Image (cartoon, rainbow, N blue to C red; front, side):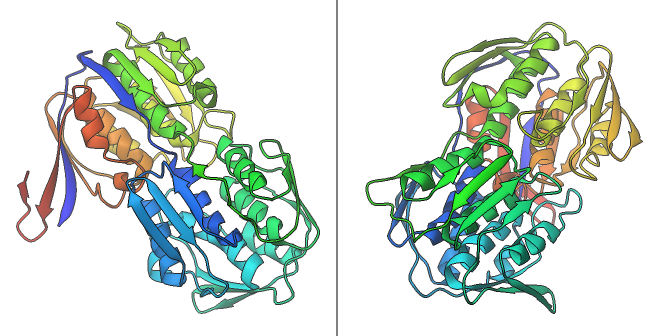
Length: 436
């Protein structure tokens, strides 16, 4: 069985309304789950989104010997014993790129770790050279055995100065966590500054870590002992990418959409760009209210590390630009190949010209038409959902379970609640019959 979405489009009619509550952030939850390896006692994690990637990360810990339990939806207790298998299970790790973040805590605590090249969305090369060079600077030895990396530091990791030649959220968090148990002081320069990093550091500090500078380009970690969660419960921050995606949808089709349980301060760049496109946006402390304008102005988009425009919102924003009245450009500066999905948008009726692997020209306004689509990755998959909602007619989006479900919790129910005609279906490959 393979999951699909069947969506009847609005034909561009501005009729969506209501309230959508934002779930916990995928990119925060996955790192918090990995961070439980740094604790000597049970860690309680709350507001964990019920998404495939989070469940797989828990599966990794359980497969390695960790104790994971859940008493209610979104709340988990994790205990990591003094003895843990140090191989990050290949069959699971190859299905999710974020598994690599476990390498830092496992290596720092147990003196060794082995892992395959991680999987996940295919949106450009994701080399591991930053991990390899960083571990070597911290005194570890890195070997390649068949298709796995084997890293050892039998005497423990030692603090080091690590300059990241490219800003990377996952690399920054991996070495920040490794530094918590390393001997001496670790300094990460040219660190990523995404709010998920600060959120993680703040929780670790409450539990005994000594991390300063998180959220700035230089992070300093003074190594110490295992952490204790006693008296502290982790609560996952709201997902800014999910909030931004609903914001784009509202800017296209909403009479009035209330996006709640979010942090508007994490979305300043998308909010300003949408306002320059003519979108009416009202900001409250934990809520954004958006109303679609009668027409959208063209705007140019250039992705950038935080606090710039997020690469993870580039695909939804490109869908919006197909409905703007004029020419817009999209410049993807971070990932190679992340504009490949635009071919499918063109097949729906969009006028998109590929200028080079990193830039496209979007000419609007164009009418989109429903069609059969296959979701290529997590973020482009949701962009296809938005395009299908905008389009005339019915669209069928395949590959939902292995892409969209990785990062968005029960997205179809929340879309239906604001007026979208969407159903989850199962398709049987042998007969291609669809049942709802």
